[in-house]
Length: 132
Image (tube, rainbow, N blue to C red):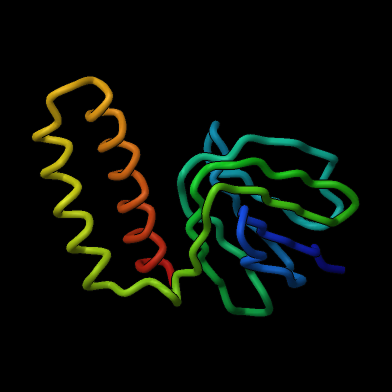
């Protein structure tokens, strides 16, 4: 048996395939899903979703959203998603360094919040590269 997993963003379907196991970055921590999992609706944080197909793991960076698990079907609705294979390591590292400076230089509370969210996205991209 397998799980049917769909990752949907506002502009495209990022992933639509069967997998044996999935690890989600829920707002309360990592959440593992296997076949036969109880129905579930959970909020997702910025982080890395991992999917196991055969002996291969695939990493996808999720930019917040929700996941629904029902009858071996996992539907992920999120603001944005990127497969680790599509992330350029040099660009990701440069973005991380630039964003760290933005956080340090943020003057207003709003700038600090926006820069911190961007920093979390950059860190998730680097983490996805490390796990792919």
